[in-house]
Image (cartoon, one colour):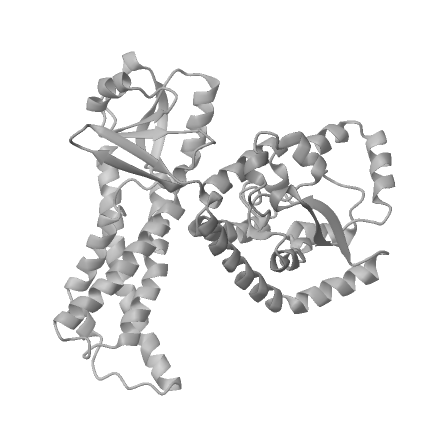
Length: 449
């Protein structure tokens, strides 16, 4: 299985080379197309000129390797971020080398730039397809162990790690100290087992030790390790995401520009939805609900109305006829087959179009594009006692980790933990990933009702 892991790395390496030359090819013919419709200087050279720059793909490959692109990569988003950083640095390096060789004027600036833009698509795409075939379809993942006793917590952790097929690792057993063997290269170690004695006793048996933490109060996405070699000391530094004034200002600036742009684009959709709501059912177009925002102050969160105007009476009648529904409502704060929802309202909820008016809340400063889910005062009192101080310092979001992790299928207390994790681990990259995954969640429709 170690041999299989090496084959995978070789395939990824040659896949990157293929993606590089495909990008040059696409960029060359895109440049010719642009030349025909824009006032550009005609290309005075052939495609072979770029093939002769043998050092250019070497720069890209070395940079990807330097940033860890051929090492341990757990998720597709980790890999994508590594590749974006690598390609940006490679782009600058290639231009510096072309300038030093006095060849910057002999090549097309547009073509070189387009090549790296295409690489941002081709390299991640080819890697994904290769790993899909190797890991998902043929299940040729590298076999590994999870250290610990075979308890329920360990089995749940093992299932969660194995679900992340993109990592290339497959945990086949839970290992106790006395049964440690060196037939596998990698061992996953839960943090609750980790101590100096354990690490010393098993480190020699495994090439890779991967420590796994479920500690919700630490911001591991913003963690760095500093070492004092002369003192044999390691420092783990963490900064708490959105609990930084500078980051809050940056996020607010992004929210204003992004929400304004999206609002302008969706004005025609707003008009269509407003018209259908008005025609299909009695009542106002918008529904305003009191929710807790920054500093836990209440504001009117806007939605397109999806319920009938006599919703309270309908809910009481439904619960009296279906007693089990009350427990479900209390646990998730939502109901499946909710009798209060109109036919058109169910479509709006399924597609999350009902939440578009919250863009106005973002522009006004009540909410953020990405953040904790806005909750009513009673929900905050019931569920957020442990996290109240953190939640009070950030704006709630239209979407968030809850939205991309199952939506209404996620239990309320799990949702609170996800939001807490987001606040402590915020980065602009995390927001970007959540926004992309939100579109996937909406298109899939899972957990929306």
